[in-house]
Length: 418
Ligand code: C2E
Ligand code: CA
Ligand code: CA
Image (cartoon, helix red, strand yellow):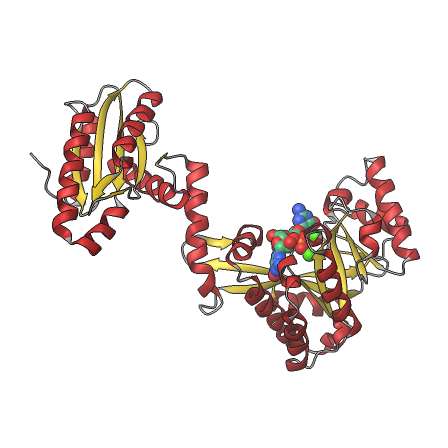
């Protein structure tokens, strides 16, 4: 008999029976027949219901008598499988069902394949709790849909991140409008006299569900979505506006904003930066744009040209994570730069790794000859600071001085630091 649509409570009830009575492993498979929804919209629900009916019959022939199929929605099925000897059997079962669902169906004299996804969670491996099991199968099903693979078995690390990225993507576009982005500031100070020279603005996203999402996580997503120019625009404008709010010391403090290589693929970026310094009445030399050398390699000619034009207006250019981009000096020569930031990976071992110390010393000497400011980032101890002074490094930044902090805290910090 064909299953009628079971409300979630009924499904949970069945799952409860399965997980408590099963002596061996069991699995919950959630099947979502997205393609069928479309067929229903185009050809009418009589046809989509007929196909659903046929599919259920085929699936029922493929599973064992003890297994159960429930219809959990108009285009959704839940398959409860018990008595699995191991994970391999679960995979076999998923493959069998995916083969049936993937077989083309003739509609209006045309063979059609329609998309579906299968998410599977195992008991007791993933959970013995019916609600948890259902949630895990739902996550796996969503991951199967996003990755366009026939099925996914739940895995905490892989699937949570696929689904979170997807969720982030949906929300990122509105993060600015919803006031969820903010800037944290990390001081840059003179290594000799400790004078505050400026701060680097680092983006933070307070997500309503996932909490604080680090920039390393959402910036690549923004780059993929093509909304990086919008985020950078927000970042530059916010940093310049908040710089004014710092009060008196602001007149001499510089602010550094990180930019993405993608910002430098469009000449309109120049106009947008000049527009921002105009709006906030900012002397161009107090704005530094930090860009990683590695990220620039793709279209060096255009990126270098845009940076040069910005530099010609007095805006400062800083090469971030210097030393990690595998670039040659010939390549580096093409880049306009006012500042080099030596990557944290060299600074961290400077006390006990001779090679790292030589590298830093060589970079400092080269930077001196080229009249570039040199910044050591990721400074975590007083001893490292001493070593950097000896090597001739003028500007330092790192947890030892201060961690990145919200604007209000930075205002207090900068006043107490005077
Ligand atoms: P980055 O530009 O190299 O920034 C430095 C990162 O190192 C920051 O992480 C900072 O919090 C961290 N850091 C600073 N001092 C120390 C230290 O002493 N020890 C250790 N272990 N870490 C330290 P954060 O804020 O998570 O940013 C990570 C990366 O995300 C940044 O690396 C930058 O590439 C990117 N990013 C951040 N904000 C923006 C932004 O507004 N736009 C763009 N395009 N990228 C951004
Ligand atoms: Ca940076
Ligand atoms: Ca860096």
